[in-house]
Length: 206
Image (cartoon, rainbow, N blue to C red; front, side, top):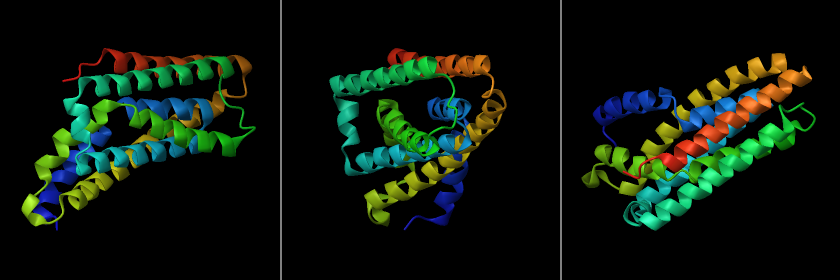
């Protein structure tokens, strides 16, 4: 359905985008720093699932509503900022995870990663601007092409963001046994989440 020549152009472009530091990468980095490697990988998986939902909505045409309705864009944006501030407060209050509940932290990390991605309206606007450049309406289902391109982006993002989180998790693991360092990690992670919230509030819709 998708020509090989198109993939030769799309895959390097998608990889370049995945490697560009952004909100998703910083979130996974903060998750790894605070909770460790596995929760950061789970957060990366949640981010990728969220991005695929954005791709599905864009492929169905629902993403155009976000682009056309300024109030809907604002609602999603402020919800995302509020959720990030909630996560920042939790990180500052609790410090780094001690590993007492790894399964819970992994599940929560997946949920947080997905929600942070879903409440960033810039993601769906990016999908609407980037993927259609490679879609050929005469080559079959537009939705299927959207999903294939989305899977490529999501998989690349999962690997890159996961590796960033694993790196941060390694650093955090060294420091987590020290109560003072644990508090500092909590403050650093809270600062990352707060910065992402501020970035979301201040970003231009265009």
